[in-house]
Image (cartoon, rainbow, N blue to C red):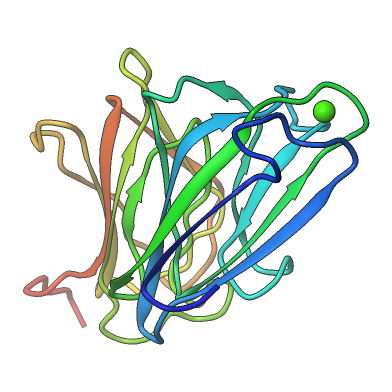
Length: 216
Ligand SMILES: [Ca+2]
């Protein structure tokens, strides 16, 4: 699928999806855009590691790209999920095993200007800087809004981090923006995992910080 918007669903939706099926979709927006995916209804056999039936979303042209979400749950239709890509392509795979099925899902997507950031609303997922795991480009500015269910909190785990200091930083803000703080700002060396808690909504920004001076 390519263009500015579209929609797709599991086979037979809203009737139960068939067993032993593998479906693949590729989405491509205009260069320089990113893809905002909304899953309006989702009802897929649940498993803690999604070993049975699963919808996987990769931010890139194929399944070697970083995986941004792996979903398998029975979510009420009043609670749509939203996944934002980094870059203008998504590869999506829906796989089912030989028993127990569900309604499946229906989803729509939209290409939005700007190569990164957007709304992320799902029980878990991953976000990546543009071009990851290769270097990001100069003058990159991304902003993600991560939202989980009410009475849940966002746990942000940073598993790989390599920014040039002091030009670039990641900032996390909670719901009321009073908890704005600098999460990490490091030299160009890797460091171990870091994590941050927030309320059920967090805004994550990757941006050049201007006006900060440092000793030569
Ligand atoms: Ca199944």
